[in-house]
Image (cartoon, rainbow, N blue to C red; front, side):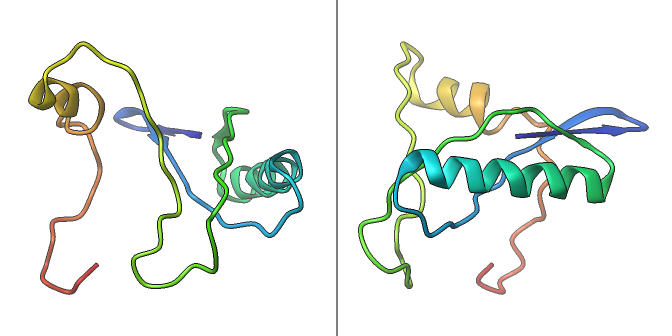
Length: 99
């Protein structure tokens, strides 16, 4: 997780990176080292928060690379609005490119 300071205020970036490691602790150590460099090279702050997820094989088309379960009493639309569709996301509109 990264904090960007912009003229409009703060923005937060979540990144998913892949690491070959023997353990979750090793993967997190590799990710944190890269995160520090990424933040320093781009002029924003690393928040010191990293998670790991073990892949069940070689990544390929359709491979799951991350999963997070969160308990919530919110109904589905309220949950999406609270965590993923707040209206403040900086994302591109789907343009039919498959991205």
